[in-house]
Length: 461
Image (cartoon, rainbow, N blue to C red; front, top):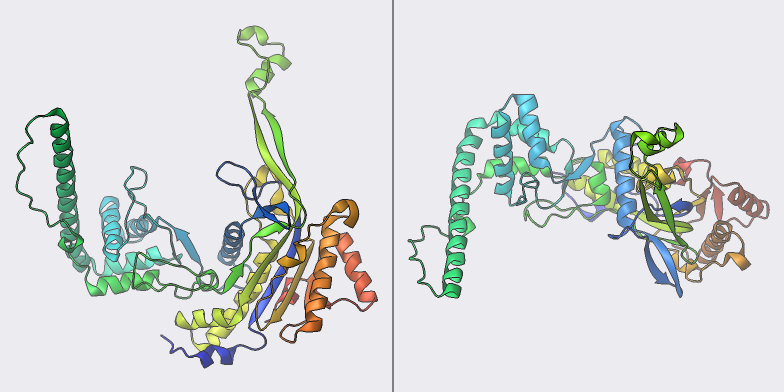
């Protein structure tokens, strides 16, 4: 692994450390994210309720957008490995053992589960989660195949340990089940006033030390497969895995804020009625006599919550941190620099174009284009959410998106005038009215930066 020093990544970095992105977008009768009750998420800010789209929803949309592009051979990261966050690593490993190495499916799954349990991961206890880890694990997409290849190449060694482990694990589980049964019987006897059943000698040790320790060579091979390696999205978004103490965690290079409306929240509860096609067919073709059931009314009725509004959102890329993460993953300095530049371009692309998919088919929300994207670099992050603490009132301020765009321009002009650790901005719009606003500022020489023609021109790389 490449030796890391503060200077090694600093030497690669040219320009300011942080790339700040700010975006305005308008959703109309949509619901990109919702709470456990199907309602829009919201919080109070500046004395008014604001609709919120969580950073978690945005980050996942951006991460999967970039992964799908890369896997399709598109975008700046087309030649790089990407990660996947899932509970199905045992299934993926077993599938690779079965498909690529002709293992019996049952043996393959049992082996994969034992190996992951040996690392410290635990599996679900319900019938539908027995083969799923209890936590999501973010690892390179090919980790299951890499583990399977190692297991197949070292089949005898792995099988010897796996057999002992499974036998000890099942014996331990049987002893624990017997303990619980005896305890339940004792409680019942005490409640009924009957003699307590005589207990058999306890042969269990009662702790995890009774399980065979996973051999060092197996553990290291599996940890290497699950390590971030050259998965660029892990270097960008980071990961934390408390269950495996010696598995490398990654402090992500991207910070994301929750998006919120620049004005007071606007929610509606939309009543809907879903038609029953068979019922309507009978009525429309005068076939009601074929079924004596009541054909009146809709098939299903209900309510769905929808939102409308202009949102401000913000994210920042630590350009030094992404280089440090790539060096830590084992890249050489020149490789890390090339990958970091590609990652920056894709980060801007995803931030601009990725949309959460909730209700995408019934609201067409994923087709929304940003009203305005603003980017600049600085020696620290700059979050302009405070510019919207005073909510925009469309009755006095005009259309929210235009008023918000004007506020962002004025905010950046103010900060530029008073600080030296920040650069002029690049501005990109896909909106006719915002384009007119930018043109007006360009003509008056009051635009705090330059207009960008595409996302490529928004990066600091």
